[in-house]
Structures are given as structure tokens and as C-alpha cells.
Amino acid sequence: MKTQPVTWDLTELFPSVTDPKVNQAIAAITAEVDTFEKAYRGKIINLTAEGLLKCLQDLEALDTKISDITLFASLAFSANMTLPETQALHDRVDKLEAAVGKQLAFYPLELGKLVKSKPQLIEDQVLVNYKHMLQRVHRRVEHQLSEVEEQLIIEKDQFGVNAWEELQCKWLNTRLFEITVQGEKKTLSNCEANGLLSNPDRATREMTSEGKFKCRRDNQEYDTREDYEAHCMEEHTSGW
Image (tube, rainbow, N blue to C red; front, side):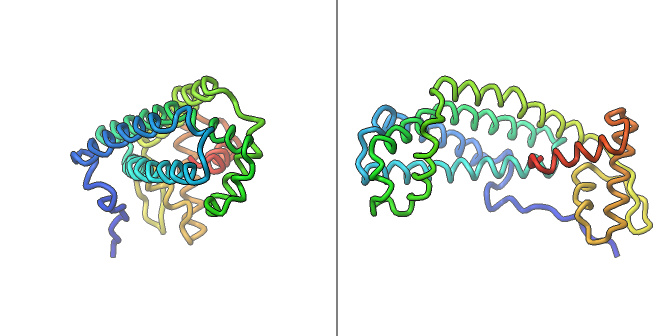
């Protein structure tokens, strides 16, 4: 009996990648980022414990909305990187994240200055739920860069390592791999093959790894099995 392929139900986040709610969410995030910046840029250094609590809660609410759209775009893209609509949304959300990061680069810098000038805030009972986070901020103050430098790093990563990783992901998901699974020869996509790398059956895991290596060797990506395995380890540890 053949089993149906497992698919993610992402409708808890958004109905589909083309649903109007996606555009509405992106527009709402953009507006709320502007509101947050207007409310707090240049003012964090003067916040009381109560004012800082409100600032942190506002940022958490904003982060939640950003997380919903980024998670949806990422999972939809991971499920099928060859669909133009999932690629378009993933690219759009990636640009949104970079833009938000650059716009809010002032926040951690100003928060650091506040905690450094008023370390007693760390122990304030009003901020008890944020004590550990504020301690970390205090430890990192001396290592902060300027706002311009932080923005440059975000932009560099967006068009550098992040773009390269995405390009590789898109290319890999155009490849098909010939893999024998429990005696049956199958032609699988990269995502389907990756799913078998954690299969309980050792032979299936080995055949999958060997099938992926042969395909990528034939495409002249790797000369040796050792090179392939070393790169797989890098992908695993970096979270690809």
C-alpha cells in the first residue's frame, strides 16, 4: 500500500501565498515599524522602567507579526522552491526582513546605552521577565557597532551569503535524484530525498545519501565523497 506524501498545512498562518491577507500583513508590518520608530527613536535613553516595559512589549507584538509572515514564506518556499509564487513571496519577505532590520537598527544600540547608563533597570521588578535579556544586553554594550555599520552588515548579508544560499537552494530543487527505497527505485526531488535522510531504516538513509552524491558528482559539484560529506556537514550545522 502506497502512502500519501506528507504536506504541511500552512492555512493556520495564511490561506495561500497569493491570498490578499499576505499583502495586508506585509503592509501592516511596514506601518507598525514606522510607528515604532517614530515612538522610540532617540527616546529610549530616557525611558523609565515602565516606559521600557512598554517598548519591549511593543517590539514583541511587532516581532510576532513578522514571525508569522516569515515562517509562512519560509515553509511554503521549502515545500516547493520551484513554484514562481513561492519564490516571489520568499524574495519579498526576505527584502522585508532586511528593510525592517535596517530601520530598527537603532533599537538595540539605544537599549544598550540605556542599560549601561542605568544598570539598576536590570533588577527592577517591573522588568523581572526581561532580566536575563537585559543582562545579555549589558554584557554586549562594549561590542556594539554604530547604526550605519549595523545597517551595512544587514545589506551585505542580504546580497551576499543569504543570496548565495538561496540560489543554491533553488538550483538544488530543480534536481531529481534516483534513489532505491526498500527495493523500489524512485525519482525524488531534493526535498523528498532530504526527508529520507532521517528515515529509521539505515539502508534507506545510506541509499539516499549515495544517490544524492552520485547526482551532484555527475553535475561536477564534487570530485570525492569526502568533499560531499564535508559540505553536507556545513549545511547541517549552518541550518540550511
